[in-house]
Structure formats: C-alpha cells, structure tokens
Image (cartoon, rainbow, N blue to C red):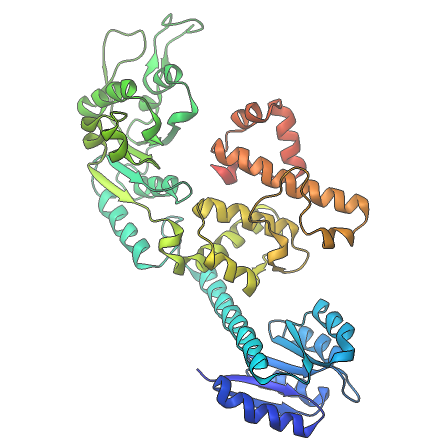
Length: 462
C-alpha cells in the first residue's frame, strides 16, 4: 500500500527536496502545500497518512494549522519541523497534539527513521479504528471474543461438548476465560433452561465445602439446626461448575470421585445417598499431570474429570486477538462505569501487543479500567495506565502530578493506589469481598465503602 505524506512549507526548495528524498526512501507519495490554508483544503479532500508541517510560515503558522488539523482530522499524525532556536514552540506543539518534531537542518537518515516510526503509528491507528468498528458489529461467541485460529478451535470444542452430557475439564492460565467457557457450554446444552451453579473450590475450607456441595442433615454439626440441600441438588437439571478443582486435596477428591462415578451424593450426617441429575464442568489453572506425579492429585479422579477437555490458550499465543479483545473490554467497562467510550492510542496498543500478559484477559481488563478512569481525553495513552501497579510511597508520573494542585494530585494518587491495591486483592480472591477484606485487615463494610468511593466493582474480578 502506497502511503501519502503531506509536506507543508512555504519554501518551494524545501518542498521539492523532501519530495525527491522521501518518495524513494519510504516508498510513499509526497503531496506539498505552501501555506496552512492550502494544506487544510488538501487534508479534507485527501486520504493522508502523515503531515510534515513547518512551524514558521507567513499567515497561518504551524501551531495554528496543527490546532485546525486536530479539529478537522484528530487521528492524522502530525510532525512539526522547526529551526533549532524554536524548540520551545515545538514542545508547545507536542502538548497540543503533534506526534513528534524535528529540527532543521536535519540529517536525511535520521529523518527517514523518524518518519517510518510515525507511519507505523498511523498504520496502527488505522487498524485500531478498523477493529473498533469491527468490535461494535461483532457477535461474540457466548461472550468469548476472538477470531484467531486458536479461538475458533476452542469454539468448535465448546459446541461439540455442549451436545453431550459428559463431564468437561477446562484448563488454562488465570484470566483466560474458564468461567465464560463453562457458561458457554451450559448455554448451548440441553440443560440451558436449568440452573448454572458456580463453586470456587479453594475459597472454602474443605469441611465447609463438603456441606456446601452435598448438603447436610439437621444435627450433623453445631449450628445445623435444619436440613439443607447442597449445591449439587440446587443444580438439578442444570450444570454445576467446580472452579479451580486442582486445588482440592486427594482426600476430598476421593469423595468427589464417587459422585462422578455413581451420580449420587451423601449429605453430611445422612446414612443414605441421593441421586443427582446434573452436568459437571470443572476447571483448573494447575498442571494436573505434574500433581499426579507428586501424588497430589488422584489419577483415577483425573480420568473421570477429563472425559472432554477444553484447553484455553494464553493471550501471548494468539496476540492477533488482543486489539479485538481490548476494544470489546473498552465498550463493556465504559458502559459499566457510565463513561463515554474511549479508544486506545496507537502507542498504548503497541504496548498491549508486545506485553506477555501473564494475567491474560483479567490483567488486560484491570489495565483498561484504569485507563477509562484516569484518561482525561477520549484517547487512553500509556501515561494513563500503570502496568506495574502503583505501590505505597511510589508516585507515578511525578511530572504530570506536579502540574496539579496538591489536593488533586493527592486524590489522583489515591485513586490509582486503590485501583491497583484493591484490584490485586480482588483478583486473588476471585472477587470475594469478604476474603479480600480479611486479607488486608479491614472490615468488610470499610472495604466496600472504599470500593464505592473509587468505583471499583467486585464483579469485574469474578
């Protein structure tokens, strides 16, 4: 694809020099304009990839032209050309939306490298905008987003699994979408009209987990003042989802093995067993083969679990889905936070594509929520988010904070700290506020009050 650069300079010799040197070096087409007024007409009528604008021109200068360009074509990448003595003006242009500036006289090789980088930015921005439009029209597969070969394979296995009543094991790293996948299997199955009951196995001590799953008889233990059905019974004619099943002990695996084999449960304190009519889906982020070799996971239980297996790939193995997922999350969380829909800047999208995302979609979700809350424009830039999280006593981006009043800088720092700190707590507790409060030494109500103040929703971490 031949890209188009507009050179705006009142010196005809400079226009011709840049046209002769840039067209072969960048394999592009160079259009020229001798004034800001002529440039504006060309910008509105020409599909441009980049504008190279001289800052000192008679009539409309480069700063005035930049302001009008940003109003007319806000996504156009603009580079300012300036003499060495006018660097202050170039810095002002950067604040007003210019992508970069170069000083005259310039080295040809350095100029070409700077323009190549700017054109990459334009390409990324164009692709970002295309994906935003595509995302707004996309029909997500049961809330799972992605169109890579890896994700299409996952969709096929989900559809195949849904047609059966067999046990399904979903594997994948934290944040890859195991809960969404389980719900997709249920929603596409013959049990979709029945309940979907999700249980986070490691969130409860196993003595309590047993009574929660199997129920109990009156008098079975202290405070058992009446009979109570367990979650297997609550999921009757539906699906029970045993999340992070790799974390339970071999002793409790033995109790579940009977349930899998016989399709019956024995409530705590009851001598008789009860037949159950439920589809079982389980998930884990653990390496079960490694746990089996260490005698930490029963091999016979594993074979009962993994009749059908759905393996979810980490983001780094299908990076082509990152822009689509990011834009989907932008729309979703902008609506939840009652904020206007923003877009990721090309520079931030480039960082997204290079990042390993060890926390996968959940990590990306947290970063995007930060961006929605902290961005002061309709574009989220790298400075609006903190990939490394804000630690107590560490002020991020101190230069921008110093431009604020003390009160505003303090509130902004507290906003970022709480989003990061509480986000980590809720991630570790899978959105369980009680566990998060216990972990940080606060009362549950006190933590909830902080979450309300800083617009942090536990639902985003479940």
